[in-house]
Image (tube, rainbow, N blue to C red; front, side):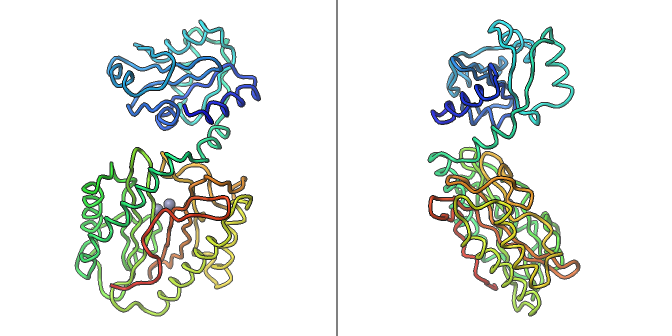
Length: 356
Ligand code: ZN
Ligand code: ZN
């Protein structure tokens, strides 16, 4: 665990009168101790840390994991509760979303009824919300791959090509360039399908005189890229062209407001009001953006529900959209790093209107 995270976690242990944190989720485990396998538990206490995993992962854990003690278990929850009881722990923090109900019941049944489990989700979200320089470096590399990969498939974007072909070529290009895996099922939504904010690539073929939206990304060292561009195919009708300009204005306006201290809800409102004043408020049904890191969608949510404020070191998306059912849609998305005096854009593809 990096030093700032250690300090932060120790503070939270004190604040909530906890003896330890147990991390069951793979992203938090990776964040805390570098383990990239698919099963394990990381237990953090003031004076010691443990990583527990099964026999499949012993070698990998020895090579990767930063923890004081490595433990090999046969039954995860038995081993964890035995360890906690041996350490005389009474209250252990955990992230509720990392266990399902059956697992939580199993954890409480194993002779450890006196251990108290305390949900600490929001505190851990806040820790991961501020990126370290090495995290920012990986996020930047992933964003760079987006631009390089997209440049290689641009010549394929023309009437007659299917959305699925474009999604596949984009994915292959990202993998060839060194991206780890696609960040999510790519959205390639052309013509009327552009009105589906999550229109995963279909067999539809692009036609002339319509818009096409690409939302795609990859991963570098587990860190995601996320970017959306909307392009014209041939001459695009004036009403669609008008919504492109509006979405771009809302995107640019939001970027101008980004700085530490601004509330997440206020940032969402800046873009939303611009679109609403033009009469399309009902056609912008999702939040303005989200945090990006080891997860494609993570804390903070940039929406009217966002309770916190922007802070330097957050990496978030700005992605306003307008969707006209039966007609088409536009979304424009950049991933940015919040800096002390504003922002730095990690994604590189230019967002001014272009038609191919
Ligand atoms: Zn996206
Ligand atoms: Zn996004």
